[in-house]
Length: 351
Image (cartoon, rainbow, N blue to C red; front, side, top):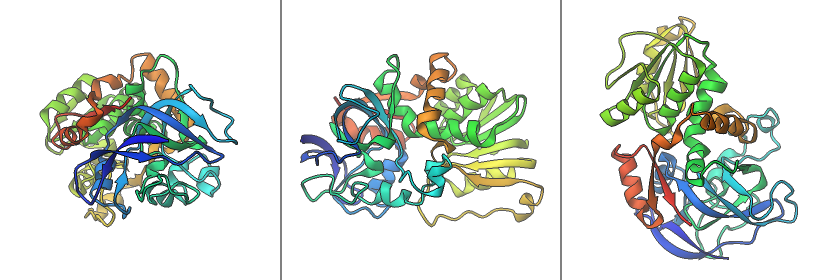
């Protein structure tokens, strides 16, 4: 199938639209005509060679659209179905069996190997892809049956794309990991799409004090609108029952741990380059504090996403307030606007 994709020819180079030929779907795969795809920091990390994927490469891992073709073994989807593509997994390892696909033992190979899950080349040309088993910065994407989620008819595809990674990660950290009781306190370090999703989830959970920390005043204003009771650029002087590090910053992680009350829990969700280290005050953890990580919301997308969609429908998770849309050919501007803080969640309108 002939498609158009946003190709990165070499490390750090701008995205450029190029024609490619997409491989046919395998038995458990489907081809999705991509209507919209979110732009995430992880895509920028791919562009900048954090993962060791050979170039040229096609990124994009928050695609939403219509199923166009299905493989011979696919039973859950049919052409015409509306889907969002999510993080992939092997479906066989211990973590997958426990319903925690984010911790799949094969995750790094499947997400960042540059090929399809079974080792096939995703394109006829010598171009890497299969990024999160979708490479959705393209008019069409190959996904697996396991990393596609059916969408309700009332959810616009441009909004659905935002749920695929950022909203899922931030909301899942609160709802599935921290599980704060009503009246508890929570601080979020980093008010991008992940952090703001955490703010909204904390409000849903009934937290009495929600403090957002970010360097951009526009994002702090949005955090207040979405439920933060306090917001500022500096580390809070108060302590909290729960904190979330959503900035991918060693200093933010240190601040998030330092702000914990005794027996508090810090959840690390920020994305950083492999090998990044942070210095922590060891005695802080001796006060019964916990530091743990979270990937992809700590839940299977097929069961967790319907909960998120219900919260959106009832007005408790207004994801539309995070989004700014861009034409496909504006992909580099979308990336720049995300990096400079002027846009919280860019979404590309692709087809």
